[in-house]
Length: 72
Image (tube, rainbow, N blue to C red; front, side):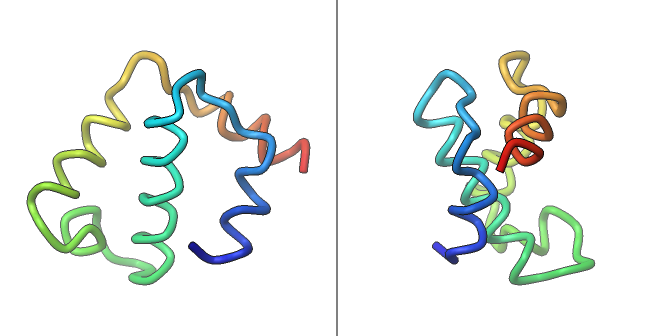
């Protein structure tokens, strides 16, 4: 994982290690393919499906992610 992703997510705790890992993976995939949609960024169905499930998860909020990023 890129160092900048670790720095950005340093204060982010979504309450579940798996959610934290999925966020990091999603950031990594999206950063490697800037401007591409989720299916193209994620490269395969399993990762695409996992990304959509992550984004649809009630335990994940944009506010939590942005608050952690602002705290770093």
